[in-house]
Length: 95
Image (cartoon, rainbow, N blue to C red):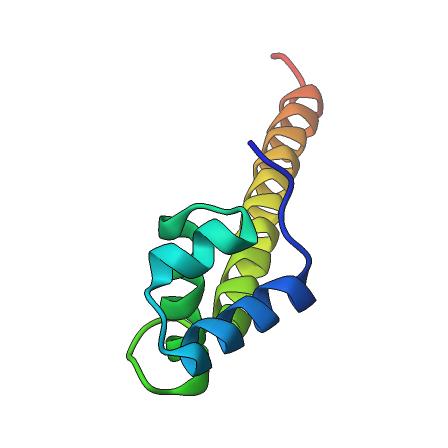
């Protein structure tokens, strides 16, 4: 996977594509990147600016953070559940 472009580069590429009136393929070739990559950035910028419906970049970051936290909490709960079952089985006195 190629290294991600800096945020400033993305922002300026989107501004250039919006303001120049030139085809996206031409601008992408000039910037040395793929056409589909620039189109994805334009689509995400439209969502972030409210011109298009979808999940904004901030919402996407929050969603991924919450999913990581949820995964960690589930693992902790499972571990505590197993530990409780283990210690409960040790405290049972055989008859």
